[in-house]
Image 1 (cartoon, rainbow, N blue to C red):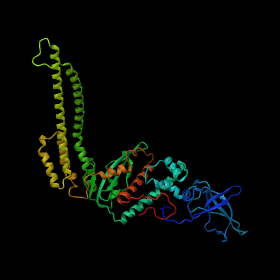
Image 2 (cartoon, helix red, strand yellow):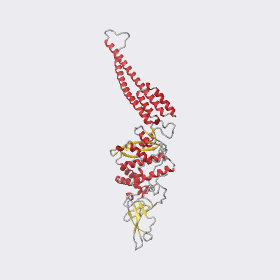
Image 3 (cartoon, rainbow, N blue to C red):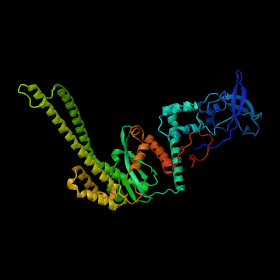
Image 4 (cartoon, rainbow, N blue to C red):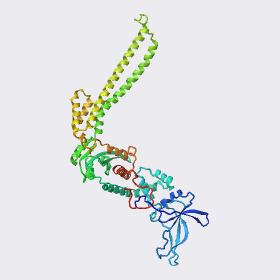
Length: 484
């Protein structure tokens, strides 16, 4: 059963118990209605305890109905903990005479050493971060004093993960419905590419641009990724939802897909500005290299000039015929000064070119920041009027913007349409950053990780919750998971 923390009253009694042939031990008396999950925390109440002794909360024989009598004590190992004992009872009826033990089958399944909550703990932690099984085993041992082999950790997570993920997704969707968070019709879409055991994969992702709700992703082999796949994904996710606008980057396949899907396309202005600045930045970077080289040359020339000035003895008037050495030094000094002057002039020319490129790039950026379409169009037209004076790289950028002007300005005057596709980029960085792109080894593993991260995103970003999505340490079972 999937559970969350709920207030639980537990009466803790400490008793000194005498074992046959052994010293007396201070044990905590716990009824069989209390989960062994509390045992690691009992040391906070009394650090001198030697163990735990379980007793039946209702010591009645299930066969004859008589009250059972205590017979002996035996050790057992729930969650593979040491120093845990239970009372063995005997039925006083001679005909019955059966023995009964304090059982914990409410918490521990048959043929299992661990409680259901302990088996779910690894799957619960996956909503925080991807944790290696070996490290998870070390965390359990450090906090709970329970050492679970990493292979067992894997088996537990393999058995419980899908059930927990499905339950969390259903409850988050139910809360979204309770809060009346409805699809806006405006969506961010993009793809992310990753490797799963050296196999290239494509992850298709849709987010609601207004509510920030993340829809289930589609992960497939990269060689099967094409426009039909994108269209099928959109149809699967958005078939019964309003369709107003799709915000995408400038890939050439999107216009035809949007047309077939019957939805307006808005282009991400961030990508557009990035493309505008691509060629100018290459020129600026090239100019930076030239500037550095020229500055190094100037420094070298100045060092040589210092040596020449130290050798040269200034004189008034013309040089005498026999003063050849001083005349040559003077000519070298003048030549070096001219070289420095020429290099400085070239640097100023490079600076002027960079300044001009930055000025026009800023003017292009202002087009997308306009308050009205009329202002945006006027700014574009003013730049087009000066085409003959503009650098070639800026002219090329203007031509591209002019062709896609309507799609690049969908956001102007419409607050429901974002100007960029940054939301989905942020989602990718948060849920599957660069360090995780090459981390996964199985399709099942990447699917679970993406589902857990999506649930965490929807819980914290869409629903605006700040607490942990799922209780980790669970004492008593209940029907719900989240604190919604």
